[in-house]
Image 1: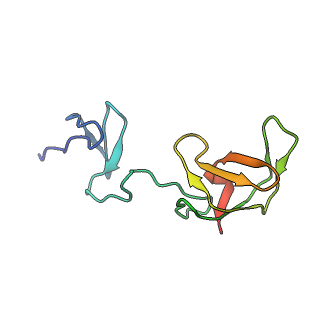
Image 2: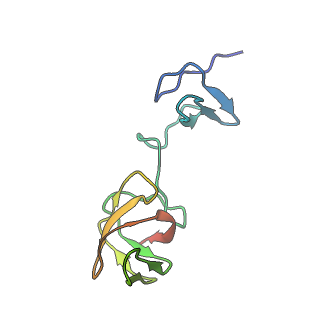
Length: 112
């Protein structure tokens, strides 16, 4: 039986295989068992259609979104330019004309 490689994130020797992925029980990092890397950071942010987003992309909102703490609504079809990708629950930082700085979830936008 071949020995599994250590976790690339925390170097734990306790990694285990789950189908075609390797998983670290100590830090919960997952990576491909075949050694291929999709991205240097390990996580890709995708829009509602599965397109990979990058910093500086333009996106279009696909659903009316209420703005918390305000009576404003971001309407369907609103175009957002020069997005910045961030870690966290809301993975897009942007400025929307007429509203200002906002954080959006990538599942509610599509790449333009």
